[in-house]
Length: 195
Image (cartoon, rainbow, N blue to C red; front, side, top):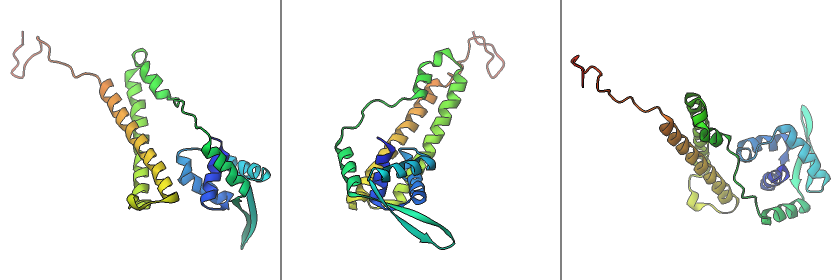
């Protein structure tokens, strides 16, 4: 997927300026496809030059004029073409999984710390997704159209993050140093020596 397609999706849902689009992107599609504000502005210009977007200059009082973008007929045709195109099904790279595979050759404690860090970040993202779900989709069984589609993508995010947190918990449990078993010659609570 090119950034252009992610922007077409967002602008099809609602026209907006580059600034508005960048802010919306950060709060929605940005969870699944990252881009800097500078990248968004560059791509918007290129999309307009390609005829995928129309723009209108809007005068603002006390601020510079803003350019509001909307998807053109050519942009809608490109979006429809892209939606129908097969998506890449390759396995995403996961550096943490490779590190876990190599655990026997490194510092297990440092690896556990790294797994815990990943777990915490994914747990935070999961919490954000669940808050969005509760706030924006309180009655999912009543959704249709764009709202249903947005909800389905959010549910994918919830499931991915929940699965990743669960996997990290499993890894942390498995990599935890085993508890020391009592040795036969260790003193008992009464000071006697076991044999």
